[in-house]
Image (cartoon, rainbow, N blue to C red; front, side, top):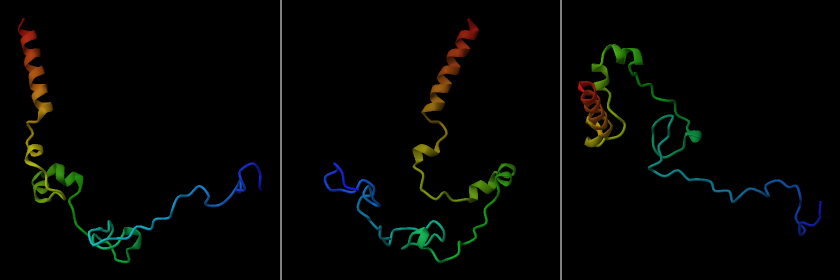
Length: 103
């Protein structure tokens, strides 16, 4: 269909698509299925390794199990302490409430 579109087809396949970039897996690319490096998940031919983990109920009943689990990322020390900025703000507000109650 030629029209006032300068010789371009009005309806066409792929006219709106950009360049096709096929990403290449590097040695640092980690598969989310088998947890090995060097390929993408959709390219994986391995089976997923079975990792036993405690259920949420087991973690709630026995908090020591949660200590055995290692985090997948190293957490900075500033985020490990429970006395963060929000806790400081809440403590300050609680002190203000106590002062108002004593009045």
